[in-house]
Image (cartoon, rainbow, N blue to C red; front, side, top):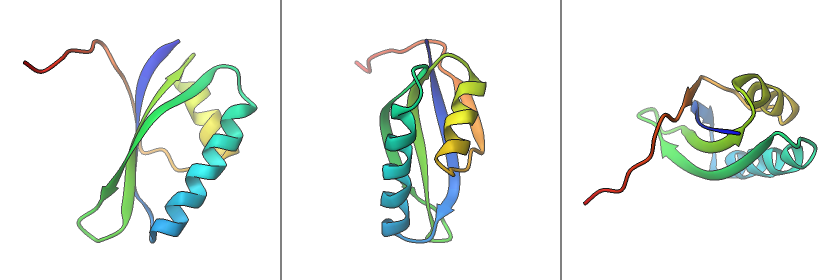
Amino acid sequence: MQTYLVVRRSAWLSEQAQREADARSAEAARAFDNIACVYSYVLEECDRTLGSICIVEASSPEAVRRHAAAADLPVDEIVRVAATGVAA
């Protein structure tokens, strides 16, 4: 499994819509054995919509896209994490 950042820009108009998306994501993830959602950050976009950056572990970018399609989630960008570090 690799770690990826999944970027979703201006995906939701309200906090309720974003929470519903989170629930769909969690439900869809249970159906896949090649993806695990690690953490999500909800973003307040300049236009006051909400987006997110999700940290996921997945077998491939295609697995991320399949999960997103199953959960009816947008995907603007998938970035593979090359390394992690700790700020001093």
